Amino acid sequence: MDSLLFTPVTLGPLTLRNRSIRSAAFESMCPGNVPSPQLLDYHRSVAAGGVGMTTVAYAAVTRSGLSFDRQLWMRPEIVPGLRELTDAVHAEGAAASIQLGHCGNMSHKSICGCLPVGASSGFNLYSPTFVRGLRADELPEMAKAYGRSVCLAREAGFDAVEIHAGHGYLISQFLSPSTNHRKDEFGGTLANRMRFMEMVMEEVMKAAGNDMAVLVKMNMRDGFRGGMELDESLQVARKLQELGAHALVLSGGFVSKAPMYVMRGEMPIRTMTHYMTCWWLKYGVRLVGKYMIPSVPFREAYFLEDALKFREALDIPLVYVGGLVSRQKIEEVLSHGFEAVQMGRALLNEPDFVNRMRREENARCNCRHSNYCIARMYTLDMACHQHLQEELPPCLKKEIERIESKG
Image (tube, rainbow, N blue to C red; front, side, top):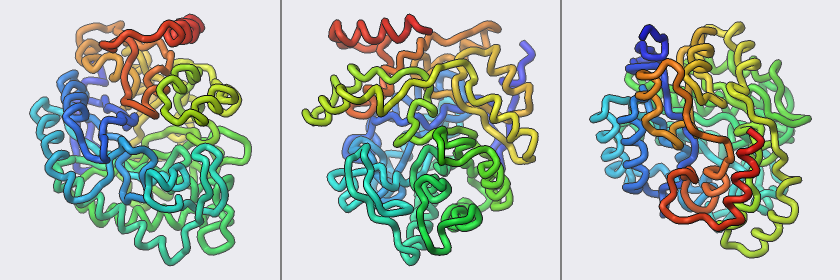
């Protein structure tokens, strides 16, 4: 069948076999902050399922950048394990990317080993913890940590890196007026708020050289009043284009303020708290979770309207992500001039989905948007309830059925 989806696409020095990419949806499959056989098996299954490239999620560039104890931490000793993963992905014909970032204030001393740091000092209710604003003299070394992580990614066999500059993590915390309250040269005007991002990109592009593709995930909107909106985000995108990024991944939302703006739908609070081990957090979230994590209606390709404004304004390759579950909608998105598409939950539900789309013109994945996978991810691993070996408790089944019935 004639389909743009199944044509090659070039992003910087890298050419993919087709225009589908597994997004950097956090797997939570790295106990002890090291890659596991489970992580390898999952990405191999997605590669075998036909994607052009699969992205290993949310690798912290320093220990202070960790938000979870099941999250990758980039350091030399994990390179052999990552090399096994990239070898497995390449053997299936796909390219391999790794997302690099720093969580900023979205951590806790028990995880990151220090008082969490961010763009500004304050208190993070979601951890909960006090946060120390980074000093200006600490920022060059933090930027170099991104560059070192790119070098480790190359050593591990990755073809590309995705720099996380969205979702309310460290770079995003500097960019957003909601979280950047600095009075120095890194705060105030947008030009100042972009300075740390510029420092990071200088180190990243230097380390990437001419043989690694560099994608940047960024927010089009922060998703709440007082956050970044389209006008400033377009200026950020133009700056990233100027700094040499090979492609932008267009997203939105803040995990600490508007998490369901990122993912859409409803967070299954009962499921989320069921897996928590901290008793006071479990009952606290159960009591006020629906107010802290308000639902945002899901619709297919929910970021498309905003993304089209970026497509009109920019020449850089753009990757669309957000709510893609059918070949028909993917074809529509690509027809608007986006170079590639990313999928997360669709490929968790069905790792072979890209191959099925090649066979079936009207293919649609079986994800029913209960967000069970996300609720479970924070404590265990990211898994689809449709494929669990264990039996779910009746209360969780009931919650999932209620949410799915709305769709």
